[in-house]
Image (cartoon, rainbow, N blue to C red; front, side):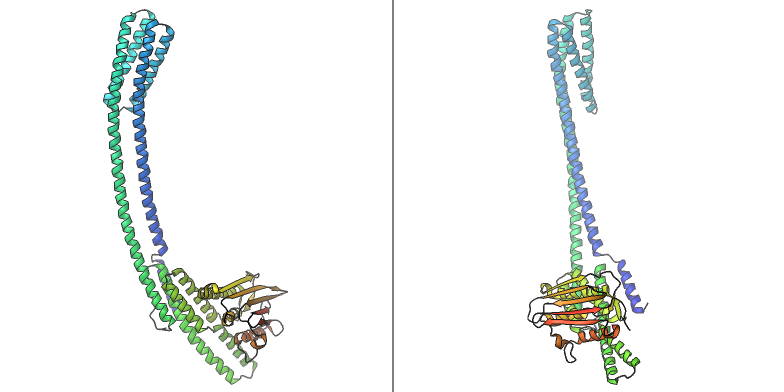
Length: 491
């Protein structure tokens, strides 16, 4: 690993320890979720407790009212019994006595925390038991009816009054308990609301701080890209940013600057080498092959400075408007094209890799021209092990943009990759200004890239195994097709 690669790797690893924008917003979202959960939980708890208190209050009131109703019904039933003293009426009265017993027992459980109410209930139960014993002796004929009748009637009337007092006293007690519990719940909800408000203020401050840091960081990056667009290659590298995503963008931009500087120097060196080799007119085949290899390498390394400067300007403008995600994608696409065109030394490459570079190039052009460019790619050979000459498809697509627009407002490019017999057919068609097939491949014509591709096909596959076909009509369309074997060549 070179020193430069080691430094880049160390820089990338260092960003792992940095806080990321995603983790920042995830933490913020988690805090908001917990706050909302706490508030909702408190509200649900308050409503639940309040409903429970209301139900208890209603049940206690209903039970006390039921006891009062039982005593009233017992009085009416006893008056009926006192007229005839028959067994049927006596049985009905005993049923009412049992109902009173059940209701007082249930009410005693509900009011076990109120001693006064418990005393009332005990007195009513004792009276209920004693008066049943007296009535049993009357029905057996062992005790006089009149005395028992007077005792029971007076007792029922008295205990109705006491039951009414018990109801009033217990209702007042239950109301006070309900109001106290409701007050506690209300104070708890007020405290929770105050805590929520303070946390909201803190989160607002955190968001303002994040916005300030992001705006300052993006402003520095915009200035950096503007300087690179102006070819100020000595501009100091971007430093470490507060968040991981910004640091990754800065590292990518710094690498891109160094690669562009290196590519410009390499282009100049290769251009001088090619000129020297052409002037010497090597005689033997070995020297000729060396010259051809240098030409092929130089072709791979050709990077249009205008394309680079346009990409940098476009990246700078995009960064200025704050679209950091698109900036990152554009920087990565430009870096990928530079690495592929400058450092891919093999004469052959995988078809899928060449198509991927074309996608990167089309993405940048789409960002530049927006809806004025429409491209379609149909690759029937995707995923297959097919080798084609390096940088043989991208220059053809680039040629569509160089000569396609003219005075037209839009450009449609169609790329089709399929089989024709046992060979690979690559066809690139556009509806631009069109090409004149007779002039493109002439030695004095302007189709330098296409002539280079034709010579490379002849050197790699031989003059009969591969071919380049150019069709077109000026002002209407142009179509360039490559027909090549799926693997290898004569070189």
